[in-house]
Image 1 (cartoon, helix red, strand yellow):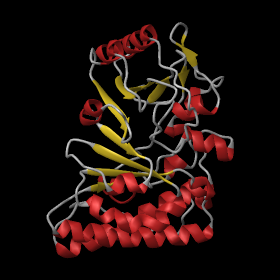
Image 2 (image 1 turned 135 degrees about the vertical axis):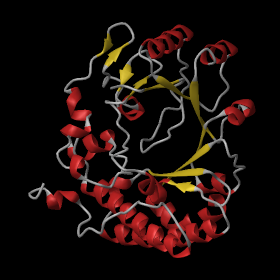
Image 3 (image 1 turned 90 degrees about the vertical axis):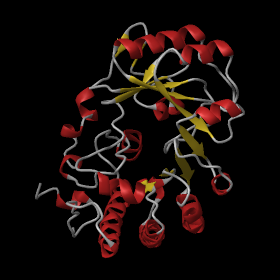
Image 4 (image 1 turned 180 degrees about the horizontal axis):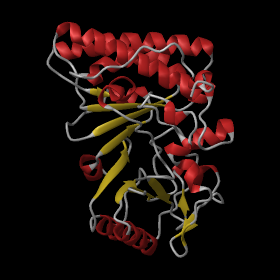
Length: 318
């Protein structure tokens, strides 16, 4: 059942996930398309998330946006200072921006990074973690991980766990998606594009998520006039994901765009995506054990030890 409508306000709207937005020419959503999108969200009782470009919007667009409850996703490079101050999610696209960021308690922050940059610079996250309420790390090239990268990522997560313990001792409790999300979940909490969320692009067409639009504008799943038309819609649901529905790496994004890109099936993640998610899951388990040495921490929560990193290895048992 749909719960969210993502509206891209321009072809240069910031990316907040794995995909790259290579569009450089501004193409603002027409005001009437924006109004129709808002009306669609209201009629379907959807929570709307507006994704902004770096340039300032016309006042007419700003007025339309404020006619409905919503959240704002904005790049840290956005030229509109008022908008940045009002944003719900701030997206950083490099580590320098993060290092000089001014963090506020009412916002969540996203850092998009390549794996190599993450390996080189993850130590610098500790300062930011001491200041934010929530920081999401998005690895933009997770499909390129190899065995050496898996080993590096495991080491990085271990060090970040130590950093989190030090921050907990200071009386702070920030959330870092790759470590703490698994501690707070009792079931799968994935991206769920195509089943719980849908995207409206500036051309007035619907897409499973922004990545599908930026990859290929012809890959739409309906429009505002004809409505949604998602082929084999059940495949986007967890109960039609034969491996994922048995998995307990609950924090995994289970990105359907990456799934299709790497395995040609929207409901089947790649080996790389699964192993990265399970390294995070195991690091969360270790973090939980370490934190409990210093006091009560997530009472009643347990993460069992497992003997695999890719659940595909357990397919016969399941």
